[in-house]
Length: 511
Ligand SMILES: *[C@@H]1O[C@H](CO)[C@@H](O)[C@H](O)[C@H]1NC(C)=O
Ligand SMILES: *[C@@H]1O[C@H](CO)[C@@H](O)[C@H](O)[C@H]1NC(C)=O
Ligand SMILES: *[C@@H]1O[C@H](CO)[C@@H](O)[C@H](O)[C@H]1NC(C)=O
Ligand SMILES: *[C@@H]1O[C@H](CO)[C@@H](O)[C@H](O)[C@H]1NC(C)=O
Ligand SMILES: *[C@@H]1O[C@H](CO)[C@@H](O)[C@H](O)[C@H]1NC(C)=O
Ligand SMILES: *[C@@H]1O[C@H](CO)[C@@H](O)[C@H](O)[C@H]1NC(C)=O
Image 1 (cartoon, rainbow, N blue to C red):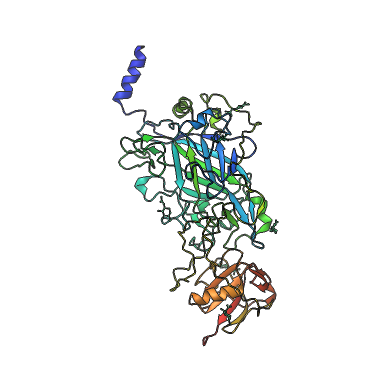
Image 2: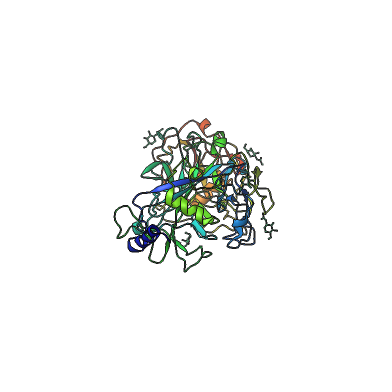
């Protein structure tokens, strides 16, 4: 052994191993026609079976319903430009739900990037061990992050908040999220530090140049070898800056510091811009798991790297946005004109116009009574419920169409007050906003019944499919009857307000 090698080796033992003072990074780019594959496949959460919802998957072609530790290394191709990366990366896909007929239309993936961040730390950053499984985000969540929309990626800074939606726009003059949004009534909440991002879906079209609505998912970077490669529920934590010099974050003792992965998945939402009205406090996109809120965004990873190649990239490459394929040590780079794809292993229709989401996931989320309302309607869906194929959405809109007329809909206990203005950033009825009658099921009679059960005396429907309850009208005035001109999504023989216009009904005091 040469002397300098011994010296370097000794230095490694005597000093803190290769501390990093500033972030370096390299983006992993994919190539080809669409992702590697799409379908109800998830070998981490649902090994050997159909997954509950559709995912878009990138990476090595040996992706399968069941995978062993080394399965990916033998992949015959990979959708990653760097041939040495046969890892798999996946997230739920996105659908558009049409508010007039309730059908679901698949939103094509635009493209995906995976950032490999090598963050400042006193630890030595190591390559992903082959077969490592990780999941970030929570499929069951339908409520906004308790600490707000901003990311929290350091365990010493509070509860981890790893997922966001980014909405790149040419102008933020009208914010992507209503400024007063509490995230519980049809639209998410703004990241206070970033106009372009938030938790949950925004209610504006994302028209940034070549950058539509984007799912953002950060992964933890500290691996506990004692938990093991397969223990995705507890083998990883985010690093902590506690007790470190400024800007650095370290892993717990005995854990291994890995690269910080960050998925960006762009969805081609501008294709649908003419099919919905922006800035109305609601939006039409829904995750494949039935989540209308976007809070349940999550990502999965199985490592299939040639560890030597990745270690060299970690140690020597800071190619940044120009891409990992530009790193001197990246090895063979695939031809971006090729494509690496495998079939959907759960053959079924997942694209185009669908009556139900694949896996029959009912739409869930939003429609929770505002905290100001004393009585939560018994029929309101619990926001934390896990969607499952067998569970059907709570249905409250049993409509009585017999006595409905096309202009107004009243019965014995309710009367029609008229068409009233509604200001999206300053609602007229604030008791319950966006009452959950089931998507595509809103009717004026159903809204009256819902508000009655919830203890309110006023009910209002708007924009064909929205229901509001309250006890008094605020900042609103009567407007021309013709402004309330939209047929109810749940019953075309009834009228459900219009754009910024509420069909308002009042409950008789002696009913
Ligand atoms: C998935 O696994 C099955 C069973 O081992 C095998 O027959 C099939 O070829 C695999 N599919 C892919 C795409 O690797
Ligand atoms: C890389 O691209 C070549 C063709 O350019 C293809 O033959 C090969 O299968 C690809 N390798 C991987 C691992 O994708
Ligand atoms: C629902 O409406 C959308 C938009 O108008 C349309 O593209 C789609 O084909 C319709 N689906 C059905 C089943 O009518
Ligand atoms: C995921 O969210 C659900 C619903 O809020 C919660 O009950 C569960 O504990 C969460 N799971 C994890 C691993 O945090
Ligand atoms: C809606 O309310 C906001 C906030 O109170 C106000 O600034 C805006 O002018 C109102 N818009 C209309 C059309 O009345
Ligand atoms: C209207 O009247 C019927 C019976 O008369 C009742 O079942 C229903 O709940 C009432 N309210 C609404 C909103 O339909």
